[in-house]
Image 1 (cartoon, one colour):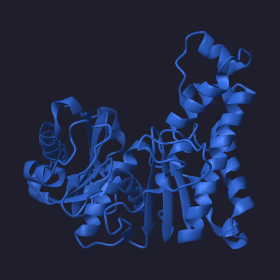
Image 2: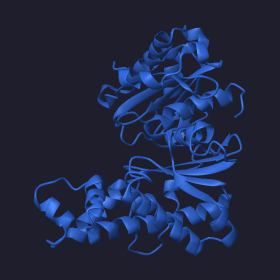
Image 3: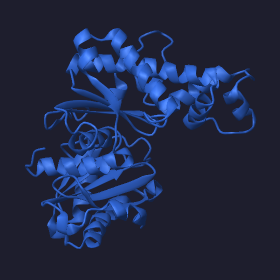
Length: 348
């Protein structure tokens, strides 16, 4: 098990913490991240380790439970001082029963009662959520949307996740599939692209890193000019980062691919704005092209905003804030802890 020592500089001393304390666990296909936070969302301890999905869900549940105990020990408290644990996991779920229905990038985990197994190993009650919803709540509680009354968050990565928070309500829906913003339909044409779930024309099919790479590969077929084509010809693996780097170097094709991603994202955002009328829309995940401080990230965000202005009702176009998320890879674990806090009866 590996606790990230370099994070200690930003950990809150226990003496300064406002209780109750909460633990949040963010389960990913590659890594498990766990955080201990105080009642104001400030981090007292953090831990990460590989998921080792091939070892099976029970092994991971045991290690997630041990991680909560480890966080308590590192912070200098007992497990009884942890009021509640939050758990965010990927894929469709049955939140009421605490089960992962379809684990996606966790083969063999389908139907596993993960909430209750983590609770057994942690020795604490567990609040269960979709990982993107947890990340959205983290941003709502202590991140980029901490001053907003409502938000929609879209996480761009291998897929496209979504979270919707209205007031202190995490929109989960009647069947645990609420806030699946990555699967709203943006293209109804017969030639529409499909996402890995087989949904034709949804946002994930156009705005994920997987889609960007697929579209780049198609556009590069037979092409030899430009920085992106040259990089691939040199043997570099075609990734979203490679496309971003080529765009930063001025490659027209790479910039067109990123602009096209922004156009589709803007279309999806307008649909969500017209449905929910959120105060803030956040864009997060691994594929933010360096964020607003990077030229390509600023180009991407400006293109998204321009598409929204062209399509949304004027009042929404003027008043809805669209920006990048700020918590990065900590959003899921902090947000899961925040949802545990909410279940414990607290409010923002």
